[in-house]
Image 1 (cartoon, rainbow, N blue to C red):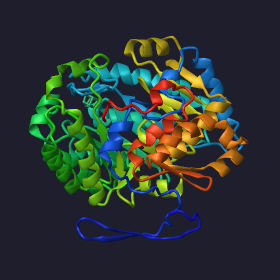
Image 2 (cartoon, rainbow, N blue to C red):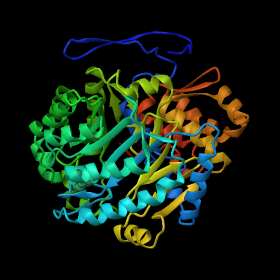
Image 3 (tube, rainbow, N blue to C red):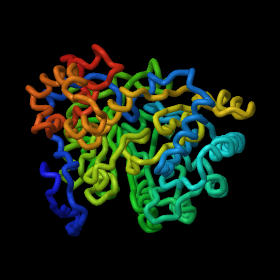
Image 4 (cartoon, rainbow, N blue to C red):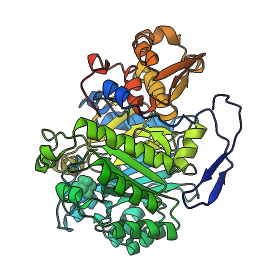
Length: 491
Ligand code: SF4
């Protein structure tokens, strides 16, 4: 769609033949489906940020602390139109280690450890909640980990009660309360209990259903258990179900992953995230358990990506961007069409207008023009709270230039385009002058058909959509030589 006032209606034929009609107008914010071009992807793919924030986490610094968080919260309360809140709560415990994992997690079978963690989490909630005006509603909540369902039902109920007694949890139907579950340690009864507590979004990790891959990554997970959770969520009235996959895992082949994709499509989740596995055993210790010779080579990994895009789009999923696919009627797709999609630490999200408050080990917050991250080390997290301090480890206050570039990068990552005339007006800049270097660097992208100018609008083309972050990197003030295209590295 190019004309912003054009009004069309999206008709989606589900795989099972049902015909659904979305009466929401499709705006100019709906980007084109991606076109997979292996040669271009291999040529342009360089390591780079995922832009779940801008500036990205490596720019956060230790000088940002408790007082900065308080100041940011105070300032955000003074906003003429107070923003709603989005809470993220990290539950770090897992029963066993998945070898590919790079998350902040604590492996244990001792459920007793949760008591000490929850006591500190509640203290953090007690310290933090009063910083935010009580009339600021929590319209979005996400529990991630680790494994949130490491908490049993009474513990989960208690956590929700503590949150409810310190924050104004929205009771409106459109609130989004989501949780990540591990099907190996949760059952349909648990899902029904979550529905009673007000959860209405479910996210389930799968990665791959192939037995050889599951063995190689130490994650044996049955299709039936996974299906049971998704079905239970739908029956309990959850409004969106989501699954995670990873391509590039050991012993994965295009043939085996095609079977996994077919199985996942048959499970009919509303959203599918298919992440690229980054093998960094020097950084992530669990990955040292993976035999590097079992990993697919660059060409096979690229084929896995092509396969994923082809199969999911053929099954009717919309490519949202950066590993994420959603059904056309899912809120992510709607938010993209409405221009209200945002990048956050879980990937893509709706409710771009909210301040995000992260609670628990390693969680990241975005309050007004600041980001901060809690301690990743559990002892440091406990010690700060025992001493009556916020467990802030590092953060950053955005400067004027950061705000401008964040707005631009978010538009590219979420909408795949930016009207540079409107953007310049909004920020009081001369776009061509302000971004002269970036525009010069993009000329190569333009020649290769990855971006195109339509009047003042810079648009990422269908061929460029799988390289969106490489386009965004050209506007990142903190990157220098690394963003220039290289010719050696594949996905
Ligand atoms: S992948 Fe998930 S379940 Fe597995 S160790 Fe990491 S956080 Fe835990």
